[in-house]
Image (cartoon, rainbow, N blue to C red; front, side):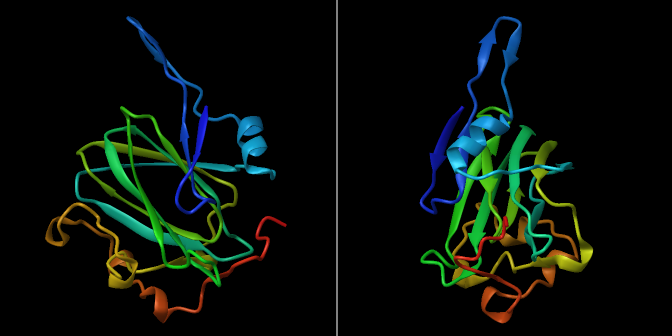
Length: 191
């Protein structure tokens, strides 16, 4: 596995080695030992989630507050998405900045989105299957979000606004500067 730090160093792209021949391919999609060695801290994923969506579906930007904060390890099994992680740690040198990466069934890339980041994705192909691991269980009480179209975030979702398909929840999220439900930079949310 190849681990690549992005322009926000806590957000990691993971590229698995693809072993292919005329029968198909084999990849290791997760190795806890190698991930922990790269990160320098323990991580214990406890729940796997999967969604299937059509082109234009946008899910996000979501996060959970402590003590239910989540690290996500996301990937696409079939199809493709533009996956986005936004730094929402007050005091961070990259606060409000984001990383956007195309994940697809073809490139097999994964993105590690740590605690302290909002996460979302837009689906670029019909019949896209998106899967992810989290290190904390879903908690409705701690569930929060940021407006996907907050102009201050400067996210280019690639698909035009009028072609997007959002849940009711995601059409009503506050802008980043309108919420106090954020993280503090320098706090260890893994302790």
